[in-house]
Image (cartoon, rainbow, N blue to C red; front, top):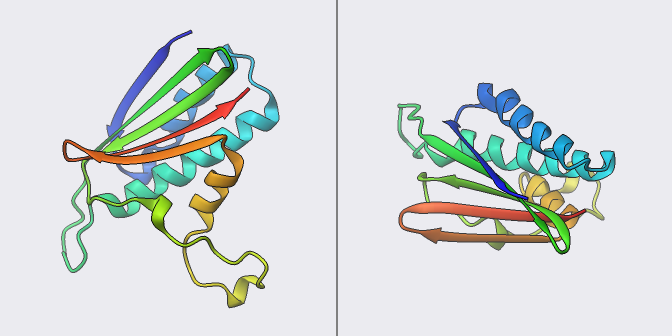
Length: 143
């Protein structure tokens, strides 16, 4: 059991590196294909959002980029994987956003929120905190 960490520039072009990092750890844990796909999708959603919005100030002409750290930690009892994403971007708690009304046709729904909704529904636990100037989002999937 252990924890692995990766820090990259918060740029969408680093997504493949981030997912490869996650996949190596999930393969070591012999994670089921279903759980692996859910965890990958959750990390992809959060990483893309951080890369797209965390460091880009509204009204700013610059495309400032910062770092994002991803840690993958497994526990034994119960066997689970926790993924933590940390950035120093704009403080933002995605868990306080209103869930989309998935009973409506896609064209009638408001834009945004579907990705974090999928994360909340597919993971066993999701937590956010803003601490020491950092956005810290952790999600856990029981295996």
